[in-house]
Image (cartoon, rainbow, N blue to C red; front, side, top):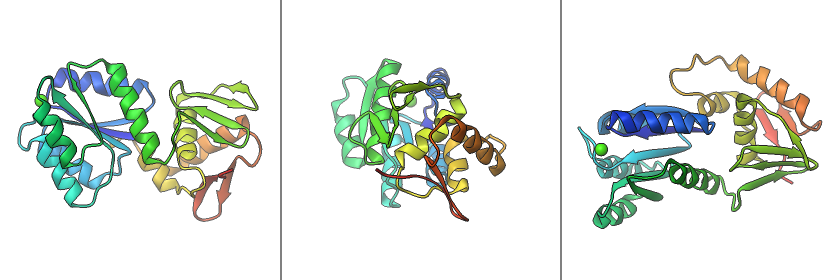
Amino acid sequence: MRVLVVEDDANLNRQLKEALGEAGYAVDVAFDGEEGHFLGDTEPYDAIVLDIGLPQMDGISVLEEWRRAGKTVPVLLLTARDRWSDKVQGIDAGADDYVAKPFHMEEVLARLRALVRRAAGHASNEIVAGPVRLDVRSGKVTVDGQAVKLTSHELRLLSYLMHHKGKVISRTELTEHLYDQDFDRDSNTIEVFVGRLRKKLPDECIQTVRGLGYQIADD
Ligand code: CA
């Protein structure tokens, strides 16, 4: 899952990038409204963390522009504490949720998980595909109840496919959603990770759809 953080406070921006990176997201960052708007407009994010008070262009305007352009990406707003009018304005502008500053990082992570999960159509924190279960909170994967150890890259890949189970996902889509914009993208790496992941999962779990991509069957 790839997320964008738009926050002008350099310290907070770094903290968010680190925490989200540790939680397994590929993270791009922007420090002002214009840059953030541009990235959100042109890159395919799975969720966006957007501060309201930003230089160049404020967060509400950025959000309104995205929604006007038909972008449905889940947006978590960062609002100032006690500014209830910001929250109302933000929700009206198309925000999916908000967290008031100062916040606990755990709350941002939990709200983001829920947004990503719901956007993909899952009601609970456990996504099941046949014998494979993924707990999106802990990142734990089990096959027939037995824990499977995955590297962070393998987990990212499996998580994306599980969130979108039943759909064929192209290698390009995987590359765009698993790596941040600075990553040296080579679609062959995806094949390598799929190969490694397959060895740890039941046969037939990840199917190759010739010429189109990969799919985890919806059960
Ligand atoms: Ca700010």
